[in-house]
Length: 137
Image (cartoon, rainbow, N blue to C red; front, top):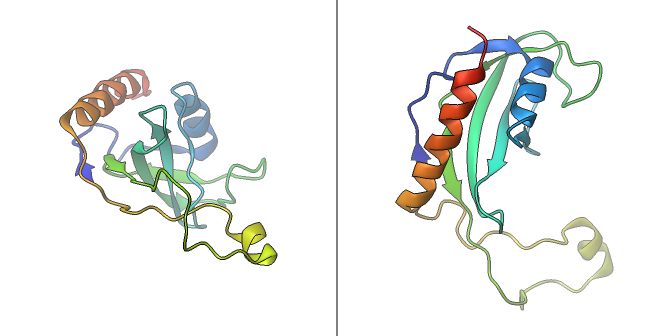
C-alpha cells in the first residue's frame, strides 16, 4: 500500500454528490462499507488488481450504501494505492461443497497488500489530480 498526499483529504460533502462526481472518473462505492465509513474505489489496471482507494467517514446523516435514502455527509480521508495478488490457476484447496461454492465463489488474494510499482503510483497521482481539479471549493 502506498499512501498519497492529496487536497481531497478532509474534503466534506454530501455522499450522493461525491458518488455522482467520482463516478465520472469510474470510482464506485467499495463493497466493504459500514454505516459510519467506507471507500471510493477505482481500478487502475485491466485485471482489477491495483486500486486507488479514497476512504471516507460519515460525519452526519444516514448512510446506507448508495441507496436513494442516503442523506449522509462524508469527510474524505487520505487516498492510497493498493495491490492484490491472486493465483492465476485453479485454487486446488477450494472446498467443493455446493453451499460453500454459492457463498464463497471467489478465491482470497494471495497477498492483500502486495508491493505497488512506481508506475501505478504515478497513474494514481495523475487520476487524483484530475479529481482534485473538479471538486467544488
